[in-house]
Amino acid sequence: MRIAFLAVELYPYAKVGGLADVVSSLSKSLASMGEEVWVFLPVYTVEAPQVDEIEVPLLGDMKKVKIRMRKENGVKHYFLDDGELFPRKEVYGGDELLRFSFFVRAACNYVKKLGGCDVYHFHDWHTAFLPLYVKDTPSVFTIHNLAYQGIFPKEDMKKTGIPEENYSSYLVDGNINLMRTGILASTLLNTVSPTYAREITTPEFGAGLHEELKKRGKDLRGILNGIDYEVWNPEKDEHIPANYSVEKPEGKEECRKKLMEETGILHEGPLFGFISRLVEQKGLDILIPAISRLVNMGINLIVLGTGEEKYEKELKRLEQRFKGRLYVKIAFDARFSRRIYAGCDYFLMPSRFEPCGLGQLIAMRYGTIPVGRKTGGLADTITPERGFLFEEYTPEALLSCVKNAVEIYRKEKFYEMRKNCMLSDFSWKKSAEEYLKLYRDAKEVWNGG
Ligand code: ADP
Image 1 (cartoon, helix red, strand yellow):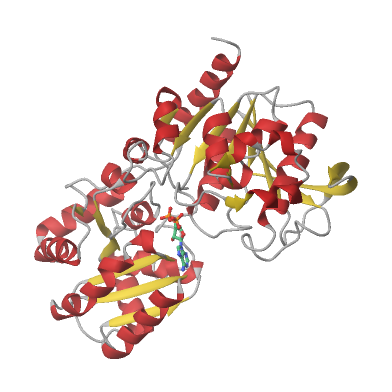
Image 2 (cartoon, helix red, strand yellow):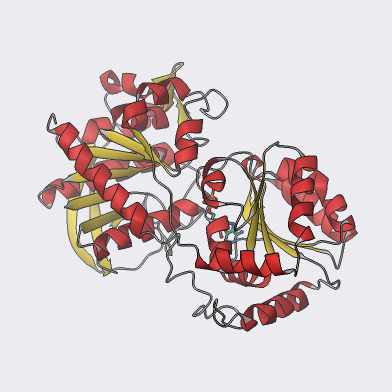
């Protein structure tokens, strides 16, 4: 089957969050199963050989778009380069509506030039311009995070060159809502865990779109994300101080020691890690008020993240207060994240909601026991054998869960759980098969089956 992915993030070229990892590892997995996969991405700062050039309409003009391509891991990565809108350093911000709509138009035009595909796979609102460009091909739309919907004032649609008579499917309350368009216009759709798929049909998690999602209930699936077991592998990871595995676990202790030295953690005690975008979704409103009590419990905590200024400032302030116990780095630092996953005992994910979450999966792969909130993908992946969950979204519930986790610290149960984590399988194989079924079903639905 020939599948065309459209996305604005792709690991390692453009990564802001989990979307980048998913696009990269899912496409790779499908290719390894013998499928033909094309991934389309704006060029950003990627250097790749030019293989073609097309002309694409933009606001009454024709604009030249260079097609750059690199085949990696069996997947053709197409980087679109118009010399102006696509070569950017940042993925998000600025003229998003113009840029993303032009990206989708250019990518779909090029797919046509290549003879078409069996199914289009659109990722998140950034690519949800589908009703206009794919009238003749089945489409799958994936909601990676319903909290980001692509809402713009109606007048902004003029900037895209999309004719006014076609606006109606994009509107909610007079505004453009691209997520809604993707939900309603795709042949079949999914989100990234079974629990989140159920949650988003309720007013609490539906972010204003639960009615639309309920309406599409039978066409909406939950397929758990995996992680790339080659990219994340403590046995081979070159960026951690010592390698280790279930059979030879000694290296993890070395990683821990080095991480403590690097971060100036001076006290013995359970070492927790938290790596995340610093936004409300990730549970900062219950984590920050719990920090002084965590420290009093004898816990050490390493935080890595960037995001909202109020959280960054508050965390930095707390770091000053709890020096030697709390280390905070405000940055996006992929290498440091690996040393944290490898060196910590536990990994915290107190998310308010979590479509799937990759952090807990990576942590488990590195033998770091997850402590998370029972929501979305965290509820689907953290079982009592390999982690700890709490339900209520309060600092108290978080603290009492951490207390349970710490009670087993360095006891037999702790090592047993660590082993269970490392032996669990969150590789892509099973999920990629579910996606393949989704594509086949989309084709069947499209053909009136
Ligand atoms: P989301 O996509 O909502 O941000 P996920 O848990 O699905 O959350 O994916 C987050 C990914 O981004 C993980 O691979 C995590 O390690 C990585 N990540 C998040 N923040 C940082 C950071 N500051 N530095 C390095 N990696 C980060």
